Image (cartoon, rainbow, N blue to C red):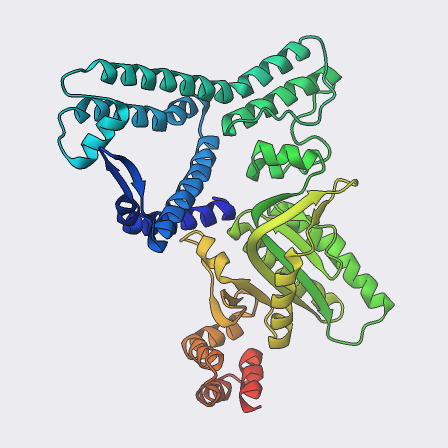
Length: 445
């Protein structure tokens, strides 16, 4: 569900509840009697009327959005359903009106010139309602069937040859969007090239995880938004850097890390100029890749100088597009959160950090030792994977996990003295716990 739809839904719920509560004020303000209709609106009545109008506007917007998600046969039914219910209710009320005897009913009968002895006018009003209902149905069917008319014109043109269009916008709901896409594929066959939807421009791996509409938009050079897992890797030499070491790091990125991206069904991001960035569509693939990078870097470090990897795994609605070189480019806004987590990780010495959204989307049988290490913003809890450390170190960290996490929670709440005592106890048992050491120093400041 789109964010705007959620907002409209909330506004509709608020205005509907408020208008229902205040509706009696509008009913009291409109007096129908044999003398005619009189209005006596108070401030509260006007407020109630405004809420009713707003509620109907928001409800109509939501109803049209609901119709766009339906198939054509369901659109026909649901687009006429409200008018059918209104018509049936009015017809029943008209037939039942003659048997009522109260000031309001008598006032309505006077306005409509209906009497209990002569039912002729009642029949005329029923005929008028039926004519109006038929006209409304005609208008509804006219607009609902517009996409069919557009599709007919496109098919007639396709019969004569290829159309120079990048997109067929039929209008209507989801089903017509799929039909438009199918027509575009048919149109593309006239060029003599049997290219599939993912062609040479869009990476084939996207075919598994992204629907056809988004793939087509990518082919056309448009930007799309899709929920994905972003893995950012930053390698750091322990000694002073020079040009030779920078070159060695670059070789490590290209020769070792990039092939791993493909192995774990990911896509390398082109414009991550402050490290290596990859896009994945399953939480387990993203974490498996991150752990594999740590293992590769550890093996390479034994042959050359010591290299420390700092890896961040996050899950967000990610905006990306394909550039002229057929490389995936990420919207710069998507790097903001990753940079913030990376700064946290490097400051606290965490090798592999991931957010709570990763944990939420991992399979229940996924084996992983981790610990809570803090948070950024108001909703992102950060966790550190313990799998990247040696068995001995991992066992020590896992042993103190409960006390460590309790101390971090105290630190986040500003209870630094309580946190300091726990971190001090942890460091006595495991002096090599760098994260605890850094937290301990922060507690003292």
